[in-house]
Image 1: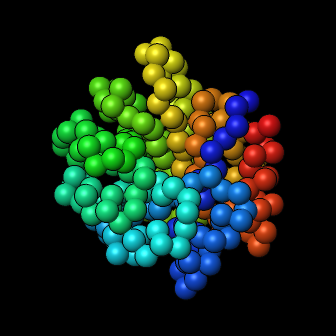
Image 2: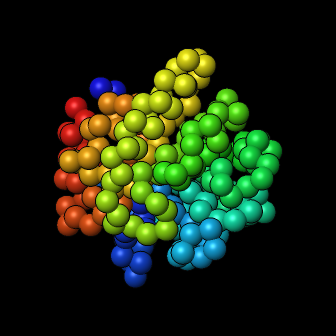
Length: 219
């Protein structure tokens, strides 16, 4: 299988020492940092705003993959881009003008992506697939870390991969939720190339070994 991009989610980090956690991820060989932004409206939790991300950006050289789990994300795109977002994902369920929002992300100089929940059909992303740098498939219901992987996510990844290939696109398929060495191989075989892992990396004392274990599971 092709190599995977490992994107540890700092939702599982120790919030009292985030700068140190980010430095540890760089040393561990992570590829990008996944930042889950929640607004306590679209999902039942509240996390990082632009000022926090801006300070984290100062402490880390890895690209930031910012996942906006917020209502009306189009209102905040410039703020998150200015704060240091390199990739920005918005939920298809959270914005009315999805194509316009993706184009706005691209105009800001970030890589645009669409995220969809487990209960949202793939048809929600089909009309804008050509505008996406990546599609983020949620393999848990968003809002909390540490949830169990939904097995049906493998079939969704395969169907999306087929659609990307049929259209001759280079859109990346990203997956987030419950991914660990014992669950990651199926999604990667189905076409996932960007693996978001929270507790499977940041919940382990040896982050380098944890990142290596994810890669090994897909080799």
